[in-house]
Length: 65
Picture 1 (cartoon, one colour):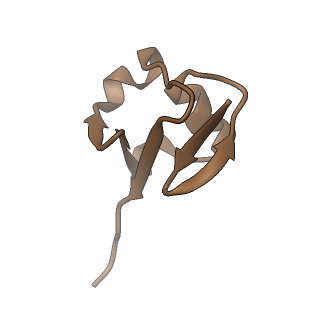
Picture 2 (tube, rainbow, N blue to C red):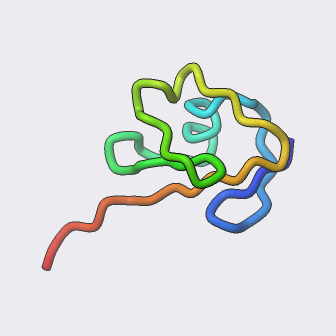
């Protein structure tokens, strides 16, 4: 399935958000995720289904000064 991740087309093997994040190598404790510009609470990731051509914005926390 092809989706957009941070503006780039990516092929993934699953439609489950948690599994997509795992497949792409993201660490869940360090990120927030928006699907089609709507933030998805972390507790909903394992139940969230992503559709073909959905857009994911994955943002990492910035540390330091």
